[in-house]
Image (tube, rainbow, N blue to C red; front, side, top):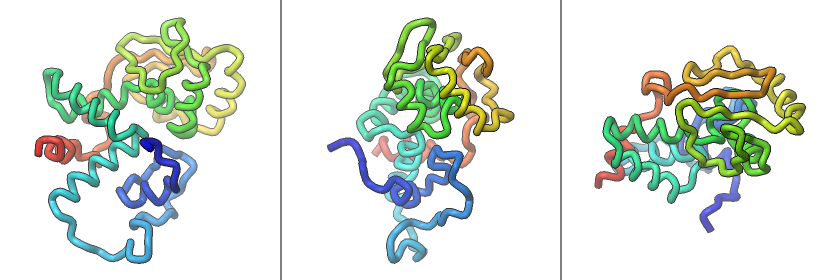
Length: 200
């Protein structure tokens, strides 16, 4: 079964995912791997370092192993820096765009909002979380869902809204202006390790 239904917090701790895509979690949460010997320091092999970084990015964006491999394949086909393109593809997912814009507290929540058909892209309903948003696309929330999203937004600080999108909080509208540049994304992500993982 491809879908993981176990304890996600423990899984994320094992791979060093700090934010867990969840703004509600605090820094007081233990960062060492779960289990009796999780806090024991041990030297990781080169393969383990590559694997851990791949799992960290995959779990951050909540994509399956098969989906992540497809994103990597697509990134290698495009011209440019493969690692940067890979992250740009992940950032362009519809559920992630909604999360970055503050339309959900977690990526899981924005995925559910998309799945339930509450989102329009350029006026057309899209209920696929992995839908890749393009530059210039306008994303809106159906009027019947406005109150729910507004309640969510009231709990989120939009002061650090991404520079690559324009957010109209009152109209419940997002304009995806462009794909983000690498320096605008998480500096702790080491995508080069992922490239090396798949290159073996």
